Image (cartoon, rainbow, N blue to C red):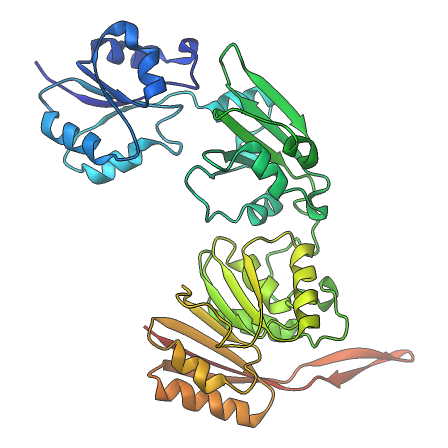
Length: 404
């Protein structure tokens, strides 16, 4: 007799949504492994069971010891390919030839109820994932499915999204889907935030304004008109585009910015590194206030703004792989030296020759390679009667280097 270890998707909960192949395998199993609620659904079969709790090592140890000796079925809620235990088990037990049976997920169930298309969907989870930049994600996508869990309840999620940027947002919460107690509620963020929901819930956010933000395009160097200005100096559009190219950001890059100013570079970095984190520090209270207002205009939640001077007011233990020096307040050498003990790419923008010299010297002294200096002198057109004339902006020098 051949014994198999199977991962079976058991659907959203109600037995009617369990596919026949999974039902047959479960009935023939010697051992069922799953969450307590899932095991209770099959208690009438009187199988040997092993409950999944916070520690998964007991599960992997059991499967490793009994693979090929017993018919083992791991009960995976919903579908095996959607935030499932399947990927964890296959990674931890590469020697086990798992048979995997898909299931119907709660998301599939709710999408069908709402008549929404999968090809327009962004899927994320907040179950054990507090690092997700939720506002960034919802702002950039027309439809976002959010798996909830723990402290990240539908009400908590709605409160986080309840601001002016998302005033046209519609949230749908599916609770206890497929069960007799099923509830599907639809409303704005403020309405959903005032409600209570059970643990078995999923949220779908519909953002009809996903392409109508201050700048809905993917190009770098957002127009200056996208930002609130006041009296705080702002890095101009063309220079920002150069800075972004020299930073070489990835979607999950983590950036420390010294000197936020108006927040124009801060916002651009956060839009590109939308899965990462930006920590920015600024000592001018008026600039801090303006920076926060500009961040709010773009619906971003992956930015932490600190009012203070670098490096003294920065917390210890910051994790970042990019450092942008937009204004060091005369402490450029000290800052570069302080953070030179890690793989890091540094980009500094400078107006004066002295600052350029200081940045170059500090990068060399601290072992940075691939040092590059670029000076940009931009001219913009201005109407002069019936003609146009070019007016030059102050030249900016960008110094970059990398330590691997």
